[in-house]
Length: 177
Image (cartoon, rainbow, N blue to C red):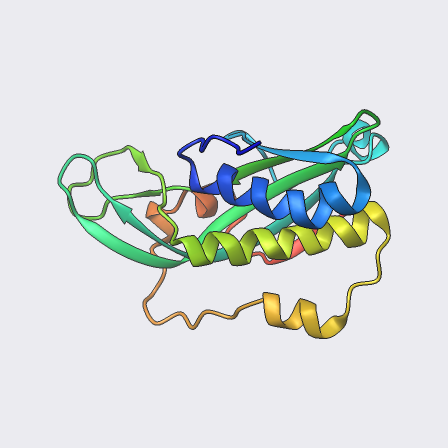
């Protein structure tokens, strides 16, 4: 049976990748949900329940809703929390961090827009981490190296406009277990 699109690039891409790489392989379905309050630390209770964190920074674009200013950033922070539940479903929570517009100085955060290929690369990398950390699969180092893309930062990062900088989590590329 064909799945109906959610019209969300993250959810649709994750669904198709998890179906092939997690659900068919391990007989557990995974779901992706957004949570804009995620932090870069786990509580002791979360750790005991098996939650893990992955954090990365990637390229995205922004368009101000007030003045239509458009800009790109290679330092858009994303935090994922993920857990293989005891039920038939694993859960991934995603928080993409926002930025404010320099042009109009409005105090609203604008959510990033990612290209399909960037979303795919980010989620492929996350699924490799899930396979390694939740299912104890041996992941070939060559595959890991290909999935991790390095972006050259050409402009100075405007810390006072970056939500991740304000929260003290910008520019970290790590996994926390």
